[in-house]
Image (cartoon, rainbow, N blue to C red; front, side, top):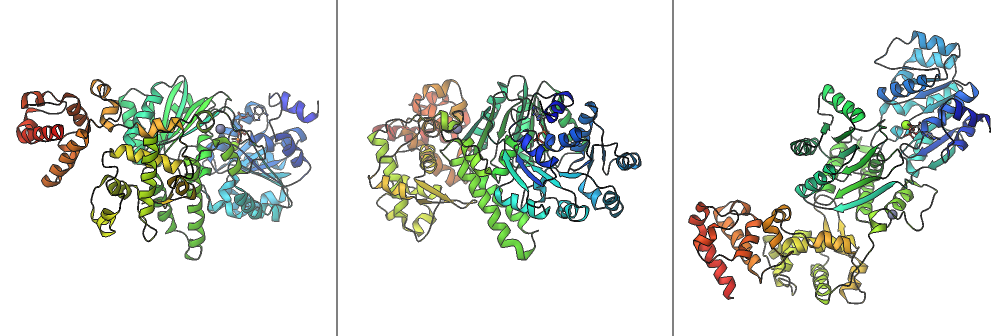
Length: 620
Ligand code: ADP
Ligand code: MG
Ligand code: ZN
């Protein structure tokens, strides 16, 4: 056994190195500069701690968060390793400095602000560390999601103290790696990427536009959460609050966490998260750095984040104990629009000469995030590719949705026809102007709109060809075609559609469409929202049946009546009522009063009219 290994055993109490650690430790001991990109929880700290302990060296550690520093120092002290920290909440550093000067401390944790203080910087120049470690080094990246102004000057360490530097981070694309190395002025650094393969994590992504549907799915998942913790990441504080409230009302032990809460509330949430046997944290991206609870069994993204760095950093908090854990990403709806809104907001603060580059960079990241969400290849492999991890997963991870739910099904000739109608409907729009999902479906279902008419959509041969279809079903079909790469979505806030080469081949019948069964079931059998969660009524309605046009007829009447009255359609009655009308087919006011959601008042105010619609549809 080498002396490194024996220190690993006897001091740290660990059985052996994890992939990559030993090479990095040895490089540090040789005095080389190192940039280690290792996934969250893969053991970056050890890479800079072990050399100091094993060889009795002095390491200065730069870390961005007080809680991280306190946490690590406490852990080291438990192992009887001399370590100290100085930060703004702990100003009295006389003792620590004296101990450092006398070489009684192996690891000294400081904030980047502290290093910037002239007296402190000079002190360390005199009492030079044997090497310095920069933790969470991606904070250097100017365009990154955690950019810290104080990290920008850390190049002085290498330059003015002349000591080797090891930088570690969990998130750095090759581009960010270059930025870190340049900014820290690393000299011929050893660059290593490790640990992005997390075989115990099951990645899934689900397209779902509606918040309500997402919430109820999340509730269902959390209600069945066994022991352990879960984190639900949301895009905005408002969504955090709304979801927390829903979960708590259903007795799920949930706590909110976002920057808009008082420090007390955030601390409380953090404490519960660390200590409770079964707990859910609902949070914005404000929650996370340094979170290392090992038994996080589930990380859900209730809204899609703006980059894969952010996504993986957050999702990677699941299953650090190596046991199976799930990472579920919801996407679709206005998620990309929300991220684009955030981008535009920050753009205002970017110096004008850098705006174009900055914007391009952020939009590229968002596009890659979207591509991942829509993607049909192995999720693990996609993430490892993105982060440049050398390990290859040629055959996929076998665990993610795309690996494990690959079953396709025989597409009926009717469905094939519908698919070709949708694709040619899009093609007929031409290339002069582009339109979104709503306009396409308007045209296919024969719904006139000002915009549609202005572009002559009502004169296209595809106009109204799918009028017998229900909107949610068509939405599902279009989503499915996007997901399969037959249709491409462009832009974020109001995404427009275009036909891909593949889609065009399917449209011309030169290629057979292929659809995955799981997604088809998920997206196409969408019923009207209300009836999906409802008990008795929903179960008597065959999935998505149109009842010989009756469903659509009632719906059109409702839309027309609502327009006349100037009110939203659902205030007349819900979709669930339409389902019940289709099943019960009332013939008089008495029978009508027995339909779900039809009280006496509604019967009195529009009952006769509605009965006439039912009668008309039945005889047509
Ligand atoms: P991160 O890479 O996110 O900074 P940490 O350095 O905080 O991860 O380490 C995460 C956990 O992994 C810690 O509990 C640490 O003790 C453990 N760990 C690190 N190296 C090893 C190893 N070689 N064997 C087992 N556990 C390890
Ligand atoms: Mg760390
Ligand atoms: Zn996979």
